[in-house]
Amino acid sequence: MTYNIWNGFDWGKDSLRNKELIHWVKEQNPDVLALQELCGYDESKLRADAEKWGHPYVYILKERGYPTGLTSKEPIELIEKNVDNFWHGLLHVKTYGIDFFVVHLSPSDSDIRLREARQIKSRIQELQTDSYLILGDFNSHSPLDAYWLESKVELKAGMEKKVGDQYDNLRHGEFDYAPISEFLSVPAIDLGLNKLDFQESFTFPAPVLVGQYGQTPESIFQNRVRIDYILASPKLAKQCVNLEVFNQGPTEKLSDHFPVMAEFEILQEK
Image 1 (cartoon, one colour):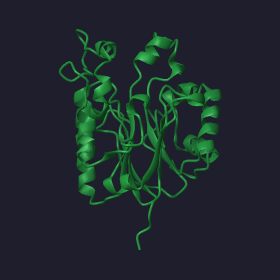
Image 2 (tube, rainbow, N blue to C red; image 1 turned 120 degrees about the vertical axis):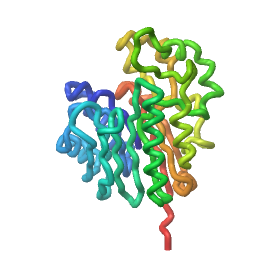
Image 3 (tube, rainbow, N blue to C red; image 1 turned 90 degrees about the vertical axis):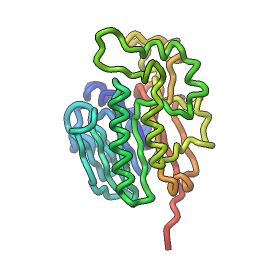
Image 4 (cartoon, one colour; image 1 turned 45 degrees about the vertical axis):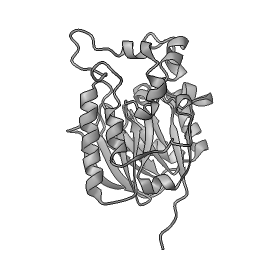
């Protein structure tokens, strides 16, 4: 499962939302959980939460800004923590014999996201492994969603670069499909293929944002997009039996993003 928990529950001040999300995660019982926006967390705080949903093993990328992290039922091997060449950083760990790349790409600039994607792609291709997952908040649109995304003219207009802005979320005035295209060419498979109706599998924004940043129920509905993904090596993609985006019910009030969970039947090699 991957879940962006929205500013670490307001940097720890929203204890009710924290408690309710922990309860919900425990009910889903994932073996591995990738997290983004662990704002205000350190390793001990993450460990305390993770123990409540049944994960004794944790890693956190950093303890300032917008950390990512991963918790697991099985031991975790740290491969790389990189906070120098990425907007929020890159966490690469190994658990269950699988390389996990926990990502939180730049929310502000298409060129920075593309550079981040290319760095991660290069790392994976150098690994010489056929068991890897890339998961998290990509802040990027998939070319697989273009058939319905291109009709969202108001969303595109709202993303246009303003005079004096340093960053640009569009690419030449159009939706930015380049980072996800880089990941697909690793190769990495979008696990939603043949399992989801992508247009109904939006992961952001959630109704909890109504009244925040000028958001209304109408704008939340109009701006729904898919920017959180689980991408897998071809080998693991063949072993994926289910993918679910939890974008209805309790999760509407737990974070501004919705969680995504993949289920695998891993065949042990003889």
